[in-house]
Every structure is written in structure tokens, then in C-alpha cells.
Image (cartoon, rainbow, N blue to C red; front, top):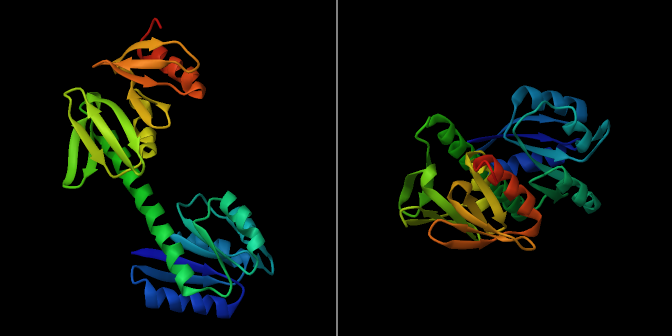
Length: 249
């Protein structure tokens, strides 16, 4: 279940969103409402919701100003506004979406789907990171596959290759796994484990680098004679990583 609050100076707008949430989204509960910036900030800090429906223009300020008044809370924001020229600014503060008044139920459904997807990705990343933290010297990672989960030791991973919304994992025992997560999720988790993203599509284990060949970006040769191009802007970071994990470079 997700907990939501509605912050909007127009009562009709609050009631409309409340009704749509109750009718269309059984997994979301509205746990509070507020009609201005100050009350909204206090409500947000007290309730700590998962999702905030936030009006942009209110009598005592804007929704953007409200966000500056709240504590460091892990929440998502869907802005509500009568003026679409706020869209760019809304997305600059990492809003899930923005809705124009009067709120259309079909557009609300799309916004909620974006919220669910974002929340699911964040939760998965956090769980994987916690798994790594808890494994001690024999660290493993859980890879969600079509059949369930595959648990493999991090030190066995040679490299990862992006394929759209999926990621291929290749191990030193010539096994490969297709995972339904983007490579960026694993870059964040494995960065401190000796991995470096040498290219938009490739994340490598620096411990398996056999050779670096110079060039505009150059390329690396991994165990098994796997040759991978290095993006020019990632060359400096790669060499720094190789120096850290292979003293003498």
C-alpha cells in the first residue's frame, strides 16, 4: 500500500483527486490534505507520505517553495497546475509527472503508472544494495530472471552488457544470464566492487582486465580475450580504476 497526501488550495480539486484515487487505485490511500504551502509542508514532514499531489500556485507560495521546506523524505511528487508552462521546471525538480487542471482520470492513471514504476525500480535497487552489504566476504548478487532469482558471486562476474531495458551478465565460468533490469541499476550497486562502466552498453570487472590498448578512447581486453571499446569520456576514469585495482599501471 502507498500513502498519499493532496496539497491544493482549491477544495474542488482536492475532492476530485481524492475521489479518483478511491475509485481507481485500491493500493493508494489518501492520508491527509492541506490547502496551502505552510500547512502542506507541516503535513508532509509529519506524515512522510510515499506520494504527494502538489499544486503549484497557492495563496502563500508555490509548490516548489514547499519542497524547500520539507525534511529529507523519500517521496514522489505529481504536480497539479492550471498552466502547462510550469512543466519544464516541474521535471527539473524530479517530479514523477504533472497534471493539468481539471484533472483527467485517464491522465491520472498514466501518472500513477509512472509513480509505481519509479518506486519499483528504487525498491529493487535498494534491496540489491542491502544484499551486497549483508553478504560479508562472500558477496553475492541476486539477479531476477524469468524463472525467479539467480544468486552468483560478484567476483565471478566478468562483464555486463546492456540490451535496452535488460542486462546480460557474463561470468568467468562462461555462464550468461539475461536480467530484466537496466545496466544503470547495476552500475550503482557494483561501482565500489571493482566495476567500471567503460561504455554506455558495457560494465566491466576491472579485476579481469588483461590489457588496455591506447586510442581515442582505447579498448580493454578481458579474460577470455573479450575486447571492448572504451568511450573517450570514460578513458580517464578507467585508467584511474585500473591504477586502484592493479597497482603499477
